[in-house]
Image (cartoon, rainbow, N blue to C red):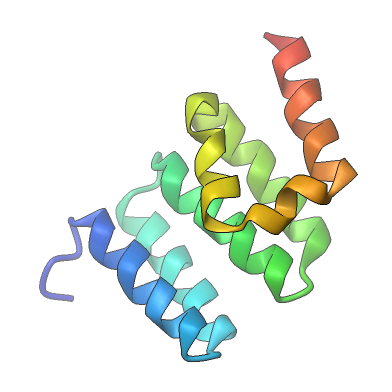
Length: 102
């Protein structure tokens, strides 16, 4: 609340919630951060990671597509935060399809 304009706070606090095994709160927090920063791809990539981790697989794919639309150059942040996503063929297909559209 004190620094709603600072996206790093949204990212760091949501990460702490995930570490504390409070994924639903982390998702809500990132969604609130997106209200403050609707065009921020990094927040979208992080949301996709959280959704995937909590079993919201379809939602994570849709969020990934939005993130790619905002800034495809940041796609590595998805795998830096959650390396296990690199083994999901659907995620790799979404990224490849996006590259082919360009």
